[in-house]
Image 1: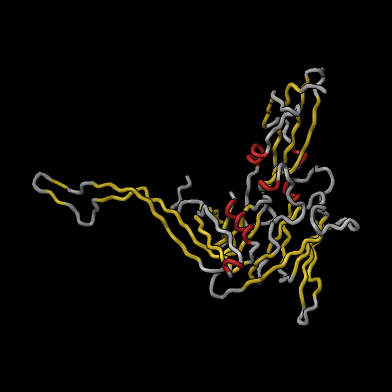
Image 2: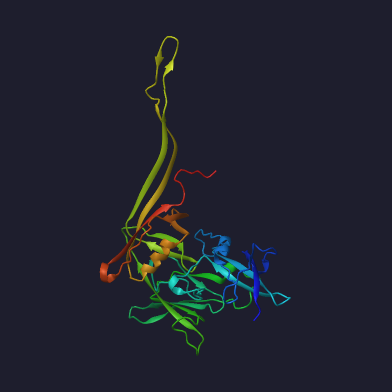
Length: 356
């Protein structure tokens, strides 16, 4: 067997169409210490994620959460005069896997969220993130029931999957957000994802069923929080119970003399402060409550707390926020009866505008 001397990897990362690949590699890495299996390994994910610039302003047609990557790996062997090269390309998101998933595990190529139940306020447009690349989603079907309980198709959204080698497609074209206002009793997501338990080899398709639960609370206002989940896409969660707002203020002050003197007298104005305040800064924070949810939302809340990008929609603006909580206690209907999650957020900007 040929002995590996060194391996050089050139990594290219970019956004936009696949055909707009840069001519110069962002990273060139050379390693000369192969392991016992005569192999050199490269960690790419931390390098690639630097080129994913997430933008979201409540427009589900213009979301940026991905980028392209491409590498050329060249191996130089001690007993071969000509090095060997391999290439690979792919789509990157800011998703992640868990330790239990193992090395280089693949994220879903169908529905891009973990829960099977969705809590949605009545009479709004909601959005379902799905993958539309190879083995991706081909149809999303919305069912309703009539007054007698008979179920029928109320709406069907066909999706044309991208199965060819990318060309003019952008990386964000491979993720789509299926929107609907139908108050469905169930939603079927049809795909060619053969890793789904319902995959049928006869039809080469799988069906994942989602059950919307539509909420209506006349006392409290719904607050939509959007975040990047473990699949690297935007997921919405609605907080429809008690909200509390807080303001934290920091400031400096100094003491100064206010005496005005002349050659014959001295005085000061009682309306002029001797204790002067300066450099005032403030931070707003909120506490939101989800209302009662099913046990499976433990995973959704976990992903919310682990997310690097979170927004809240209020006053017709999409505002960035941070989760203040660093600990999370899992809840179950067995132990806790009714499950409500209370999450503390902080706005990701100062209350007094300091953008210069």
